[in-house]
Image (tube, rainbow over all chains, first blue to last red; front, side, top):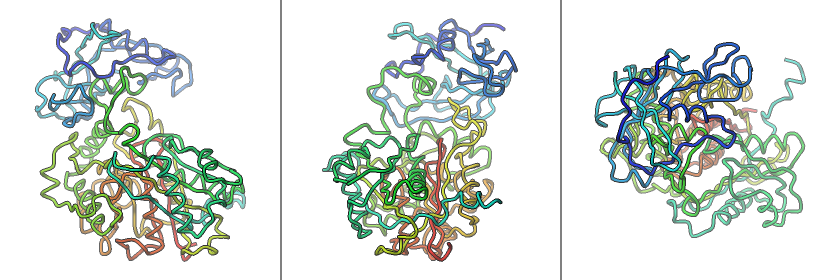
Length: 154
Length: 397
C-alpha cells in the first residue's frame, strides 16, 4: 500500500484556533492520529474476520475479536455527503466566510466514512459521488502538534 | 402472545394529570436561576393538577439536566424520594424516554407520583450553538471539530443533505415545517415567536446557517422550564383535568446507529426505524389513528425523516405531503407542532412538545386539532438513543 503521494498542504484550510484533536485518555485512536502525522491513513480491520471499522473500537463489531489491527489504506474515496457552513460557531471562524465540509466514503476499506474539508473554492458546486483524494494538512506549530486529512477532487 | 407478554406494557397504566411551564425566554433573558425555573415549572404542574407538591415521590429527566432530583426533593421538603432516573444521551433525544422512565417506575410500584421535567437556562450555562473553552477534542469530536464541524446544525446538515439526495426531497418540504411551527406560534401567547410571523419569502431570504439549513430551519435557544405530573391510571380521574393516558413509549437506536464519526450504516435516517415500530406495537394504534403530531425540530430536515419513519408518508412522497396546508390545525391532514415547537414556541429540549400533546388530548390547545384522541410525540431525530411516545384519551383505552 502506497503512502500518501500528494504534496502536503502548506497552509491550513481553516484558521488556527479550532480544537486540537488528541487521543482519548485510554489511547484508542492514538494510532490513527500518529499515522496522519507520518502521512499514513490507518483504519481498523479485524485480523480474525476481515471486517473494516471506523471510528475505532476495542472490539470488532462483527466477530467480537479484540484489538482490531490498524491497516494502512489509500486515501481515496468519493463524496457521500457535504455541507457548506456559513454561520461561525467558533471565535476563530468569525469573519472567515463559508467553508465546505464533506463526508467521504472509502470503497476499498469497507465503505467507512471520514469527515474533512473539501479544498478549493468554498463556493464550488459539490456533487455527491464525486471522487476525491486525501491531502495531509500538518499543524507542526500547534501544542500539541497534529495532522488532519483533507480532500480534493480527483 | 402469552399472558406474561400481555402485562409487559405501559399502555393505559399511567396518566398525566398536570402540566406546567415558566415564562419562556430568549437565551440569556431569564431573570431566574435555572434551578428556580425548574421549581416554578414543577409547582405550576402541581397547581394544574390540584396536587400538593409534597405528594411527589419521584423525578425523571434527560440530557444531564442540572436540576438534580435530590436537590429538588430537599428544596421542596418532600417526605420521601422513591425514584430518580436520568435518560442517557444529550439533546432532546430523551424527552419522551424520560416520561417512559417515570411511568415505568409508577407501573412497577416503585413510585406513586413522578414529575418529569426539563430546565434549561442557556444564558447561565453554555449555549449549544457556540463552541467555547474547548482547546482539545477527543473521541467523536476529534474527527469533526478540527474541520469546523462544531455546532449541532453543522453536525446534522450532512445527514439531511444525503436524505434529500437519496429521496429527491426539496427545500420547500423543509420550509413547510418551519412555516407550520411559526403559524401555530401566532395563536400561542406563550410562544417566544408570538407576534413574529414567517412567510415563504422571509424563509427564502433568510441566511444560510449550514446548507441545506436556513436560519428558520434551526431551533431557537431559550431559557425556561417545563414539567408534568404522572400518576397511576387508577387515580387519574381523582384530579381536576381530563386524564391523558400514556398509550405507549419507546426509545433506542437501530443497528450501530451511534457509530461515529458519521458512520451509521443507515446514515440518512432520523433513527426511528426500530423505535417507531416498538411504539406502534405498544400503543396498539396505526399512523392512520394519529390525529396530531408534535415532532422535535432540532432542524426541519430531521422532522421530514422522523415523520416518514413513523409511517405518515414514504420519503419519495415528502414533497407532496409536507405543505403548510397539510400541517396546520384545524383543517390540515396532520397538524404538526401545534404550539410552535422548538422553532417558534420555545426550545425546551422538546419538553414543550410533550406538554402540547397533553393539551391536544385535553382539547385545550391554542391550535386544536379536530382529531385528538391519539397524539404522537417524536423526540429528537438523528440522535441515539431516540425516543417517542403516544398519548391518548380514555376513549381509546
